[in-house]
Image (cartoon, rainbow, N blue to C red):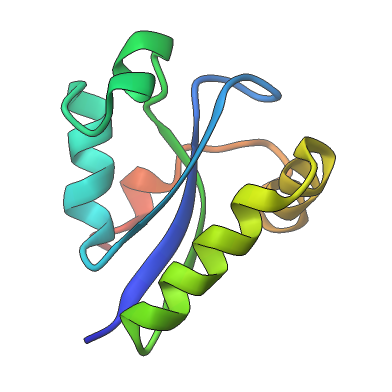
Length: 95
């Protein structure tokens, strides 16, 4: 089973949340609804700003763990490499 490593934000350069899931559309929806995590609900983190797809969930978990150890500026660079305007990618998930 495949998986995703992803980053959510509340605004450009705001609070970041790094996670992993096997269903990115559903998980991002949970965050948007305030049921994804306590941090996201408390901080208003609703914007999917980065995601990476993996054929195996264990690879996604490994990537999530690595990203979580990075300095904040590396996370920002990762986001801005493919999403320089910090667009909410949730709207692009289902076509």
